[in-house]
Length: 358
Image 1 (tube, one colour):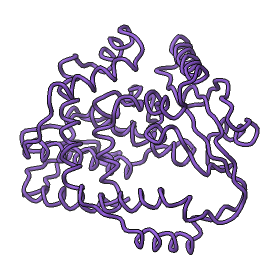
Image 2: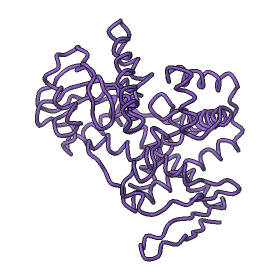
Image 3: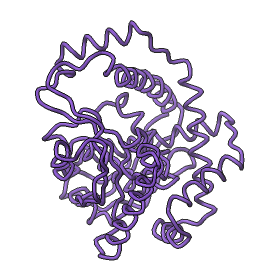
């Protein structure tokens, strides 16, 4: 995956809102020890500092959190477990560096974030955790104070504002969309070879393998289900509480879900759960879920009208990628960057130092 294609992912990893499973400051969802959560990714020890940008350092802990976040996104997309290799680790480290550069540029641009904006974001996150005890457990688990968390929220909001300023002029024309639709159709990307279903789901992750954590997640998904049965909109609740980083911003939706591309526990409900019904809670390797089937689709070519929003998002993200990638690459030419990495030769597991400009 090239830098241009990864830049938005790195930005998302850096500023993800907590309510999508990565509480407030970034991708630290269910932070497990490296050897438990990332398998082969932990074969080499991660140093306390993995990179330096000017006077700022990127810690090994931050790198591990981003590695976990990126791994989960890829597993969600591919519907299978992934064992990170050396290339995956290198790309993740570059993503962390790129994300930090964005924060530095936003700060240097003088972007203003008010105390009221920070407080609103903070309260939204704390409320969604469900209780003060859960909030304190989160702080302890992450090894952070409330003041540090507030600082991280401010940095994230500042970076969001700066990115929006830099990409505000992106325009996608109807001609662009039609051209993209024709290309995707030629490539077979809009052809259903079998039945598909449009679904929405909500995920609550389990913090650890301890039975009490599993029970806590199960109880939480039950409470969420009761809210929806009482009349709240499924998609609105999903945006607020789901811990699936891909679907939560979309109201929990996965359109055109097909057998062989989803979790087995989801697949078995694609065509058996009545349309519009809310499933009972069910467990997968990711945690506890509920889902609803929004509709089902017969084989054939997906219409332009149905694909239009996806095409628009794809084109906008591609152009956003290009803008941010150029900004980051230009910044690297003038920033003093050092990357500390583990040798990939298992016989030489010594720290190596790599200098990137100027």
